[in-house]
Amino acid sequence: MGIVGVGIDLVSIPDFAEQVDQPGTVFAETFTPGERRDAADKSSSAARHLAARWAAKEAVIKAWSGSRFSKRPMLPEGIHRDIEVVTDMWGRPKVRLSGAIAEHLKDVTIHLSLTHEADTAAAVAILEA
Image (cartoon, rainbow, N blue to C red; front, top):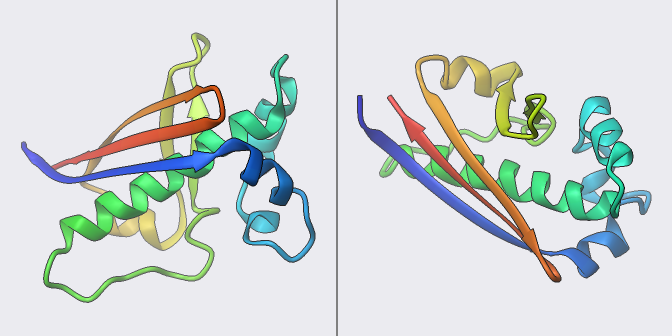
């Protein structure tokens, strides 16, 4: 096994917070009910937690795209919703895939790290196969 892709993404939490619940934005259909519920259950800002999950989705897409260097990008419609960030009972994040991306990455392990500090959320995704 070896690393086949790495992705990183940074999100401005204030900018994200202004847009996340606005009708017609890309975020309207991006998050699963579970992701929205988990964010609402946090004692701090739900937008802060959703921003980290948006960064995670983008980092996974970048890692996947990077793993296909010199090949045509394959980004199905609604891909962000097919990348779900779940956590275990200790809050450690993991990616759960569905749809077309799950089929494309069925033999890949995704390692994920999330952080948020001050006005920035960030995520790193590493694909291993």
